[in-house]
Length: 136
Image (cartoon, rainbow, N blue to C red; front, side):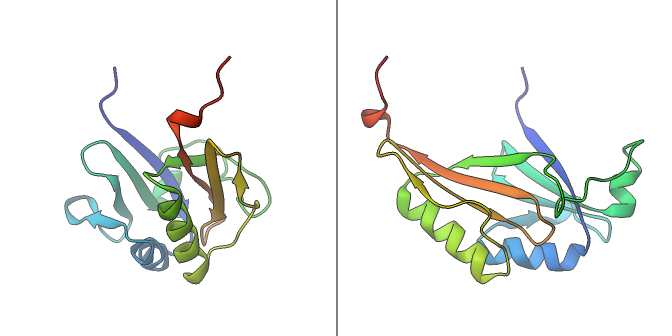
């Protein structure tokens, strides 16, 4: 079984992408960060996003890079420890230049919101209250 996940995302402007995610409170591993790539730490020891320049990203693929402003290649969903943390992350993303692509959803047991980053990648952040989870 896998022990870590690295999501690889192409970005137009690496320094701007790093600045955007720094404003959301994320840090980067300098050991795996250079002019072509930045290793964003989502959860130390297990979850990372590799932000790669288009040139570097293309060295791993044999197709075109998806224009995330025109179509969706994936939705990156991250569970947060509370509703307040969901609100905080989305607020910081919008303040840093991200855009809302879907309205907040509050189902009582699940609370989720979303944003698109500067490159149009879709992120959903959510909180699940296990005590309120619907029973089958």
